[in-house]
Length: 423
Image (cartoon, rainbow, N blue to C red; front, side):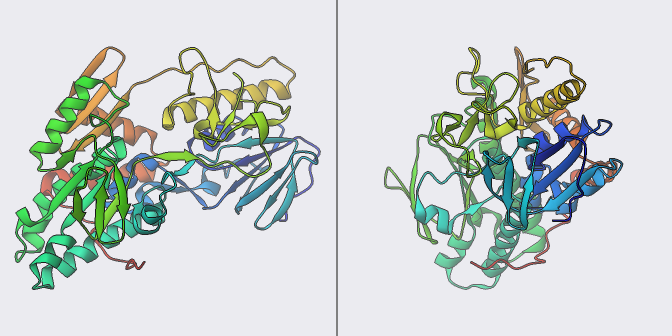
């Protein structure tokens, strides 16, 4: 693996998401060797994945090289590998490229798509957790529209232009809004043989409202925005099957579609080797104390979506979104810096900065404390926050330029089938 021997503590970090990079940033000046493992050599800004999948942004706008983030740290080492097993007795991990010992282990593996045990949906639907998956969705959407443009079979054209999204959380709502705007801004100009009314976007949610984690007020506003865009919202509806052609629901509804996007849930992504009371199997999350230390271990920590820190206010742990991950990573990084100097750690306290989701052009909803609002102001706030948290100045500039261009021209410049999708 070619990681140099060291006389300082070796901290192994698994996962280059929000939590992992936030943690490492606090330790760049400390006397410690940092070894980061990730399946990809880049950090992904996941809140904007839906824009890649709907041709609003190119992937390099929301991805940033992990090595570049920490290149000023002389004792930082990145290895692109899958971590397969944790050997807690010997303080080592096994990866797809070999094994390595650690003094401290920080697990920040995030989540993976949860299909709730439904094999047909897992095999045939389109998940959206990674950049390659978002590119697959983009290719499939554009390929199906191209096919619809040349077919003379009306039934087949309807199936190709029927887009079904499962899950009305922020990801599902933002996807549905982006697809509806694609229909309005692109279809008529690029595909004059297709009628705008032929393209349908269905958003299916098992609960009684969209954006269930947010306030009821903004939930109603978001649904109103979606319906005004022409999205067909189906509430209290659970999907039971998808065979690649037909989505079937628990109440007998059927949706003929060639594009079924699954945004209905996530589950933790634990690593083999830690079980017992430390792992809550139902949620696939590690139980941690107020210092993010995994229960039962002295030198293993977990951050972000994979960590379940229970408290009176958060009995089921913190929300599996970016802010808790960023804040936990920052707090633990500062605590490690204190610990390495022999100082006392500080318990983690989550500061809820609010929740927001965009539905389309000039349409977003925001919950901040006791303030619940939507519309153009919420939309500009949403854009500012997302630009601010993007990693890298170049990414911010490119994303801002793309958004400005799309806003002025009602266009999506990234509608390219670079890598055709095949099942």
